[in-house]
Length: 146
Image (cartoon, rainbow, N blue to C red; front, top):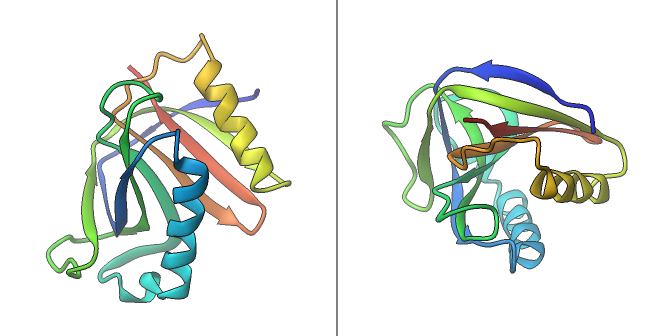
């Protein structure tokens, strides 16, 4: 699988968040996306820096087999005004392995994650990984590296 190494500085995200694990992710994640879209959460996020929707994987309790916080939201310029039913997440700057997933969503996205989980080549930090929705048929996955 093709990847490139990139660096990204600190950034902030506001969105909806829930503690999940890979055991229940196939049920929980689609439910969260449905809630995010049907309740127009993007329109409620203040101080938008970008209209790109992101999914964050943070606060890992270990490796990818342990629970983590999953947040769907948008990058913002400030976290001073967080709506009561949302959460602010500060993502530290880091070096990332970037995987560009194009076409066949969501199956290609799931397959890419399975490849990431089983890769011996990635020295994962398990600090903050994230996906950025680029378009209707493209997602970029950023994996934090040591």
